[in-house]
Image (cartoon, rainbow, N blue to C red; front, side, top):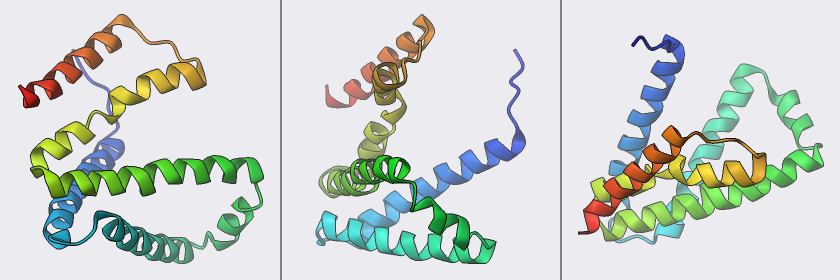
Length: 147
């Protein structure tokens, strides 16, 4: 069986995974006795500065400002930002503080599995038996950590 994966996409995915791994380890180390919600705020502010620099350097300031005029888009982005960068990252840092990095990262890696029911409900996407079996096997694998 041959996989047809674009090299550029693979490299970006790999870079994202490496960035997540370093971010988790450094967050756990840097957060030591600090509050996880305050640590999330620091991460978000740093991220905003980074994105602002990328937007300015890439010359997309005008496009970015125009995006703020799209009320429907901004509503979705605001709700998504609450659940993802705010609540999701805060709880992931809270879990890092109270368990080992490996267990925390493994549980957080179940995100693609948790997306399946949401994709079915919100986007009416069809799932195959193979996808469902894979999700069940993954959940069982995560559950083994707690036996």
